[in-house]
Length: 211
Image: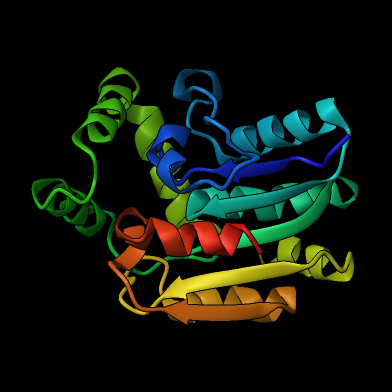
């Protein structure tokens, strides 16, 4: 049986947001409900490990932002089930950009047509139904420090690639380079539309996943 390739969306996003850029054979996982996890990162982490363990085959894991942080965590917990990591604008170290500024950026992206309105509406519904859980997950993502997990992934010698965007003011290139250095892997910096660069460059997104 062929090995799976799984993609993990960013904070509160659905897998459908990234579907236009996924190569053939890739599957984007929708995150668990905020109601079930109460917005706790460790609950999302446990969910992903359970997903991997249920199948039992080594997989290639890719993720964007918080999804990349989840991929790192799962690889640290079950290195036997992760064959490779592709980390796009990864979270996983404390962020300096205020959360309110990230919300303003999202609104500007909607206004300028970069972020699909339907996907924004889905995120808004989650926030309305589970406001405390949404805030908690955003806060935990902002303060997340996976240095120890990255060290374990490096010790397990899991191949990885970190991709950063020069104009990303959330998970900055400096953060990406620190993550890559801890993982002992390459870090590639690209030019693009900030943290959500893939929404305007599906071809490049697809190329990184197709390696």
